[in-house]
Image 1 (cartoon, rainbow, N blue to C red):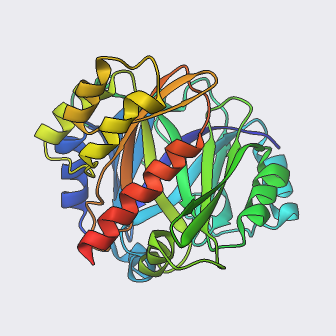
Image 2 (cartoon, rainbow, N blue to C red):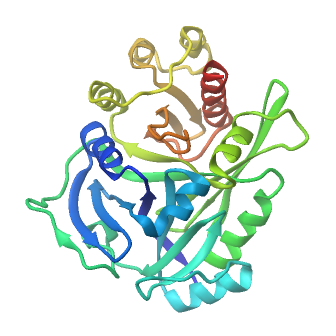
Image 3 (cartoon, rainbow, N blue to C red):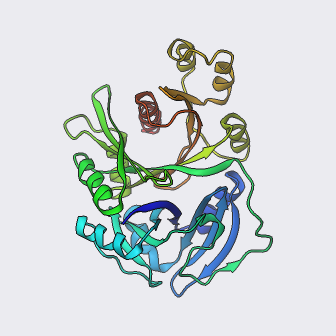
Length: 339
């Protein structure tokens, strides 16, 4: 009953051409294979060890009407699929219908988990259960993205402990970090749960219902309830990655110049790198193990439901308070500007 890695995430979208164009042309993913079913069609994209299935069609209109474009399935590899399914159901998950004979259980909101047998590297194989037609020239895609560092999940305030327990008891994920961040009259809770392999990491976040409503409440309203807020992609060198992706059309959140004026006082050792970070608008954090560099994109989707993060770890293992606060404050600035 132990989950190991995230095999793929599946993005449901009403405009498949636009969604694929953004992931391929702007973010550097490579088309690998197509699958056509009775009521939907899918395209598998890869970059590094990340697999994203982009799906559209009448069979998913209900999800799209309720939530807009977003992640509908996070497929998990398991050491034993049957026992993981049984443990998940015992812990409170629901059995979900599957079109392909796979074991599928509920996760949060309308997001499900397809459970598949563990393999050495899921990104070396086509996801099971579909009739894939490989694209021409499906060589191992090269790009800045190396892996899926974590999936950020936005939940209703007051429910984080419940879901953390579900992922512990049903999927074998352990609590890695907890944080409470207050920003003005607003506040958020976060709990990070992670598999023993490190291949599955969920950052569970939710608003404090006792505080003023903010950007997490706004996401829950736009999304029609809990859902994946963002995907964080691990890169080896974030500054050239950000510059290239920005040139290719990725729209990143802006950072106030004053942030970098104070960065040298907060983080000793960055030195001359601060000006590079300022130029690229990259944020920095640290913990007892090292530094963390990151930047968040704006959502490319109509309902502003899902966005992306680039993250570079320079020894850092966790999610410090500055890291979580940076995300909250960056998105909050964006929300207030748009409003």
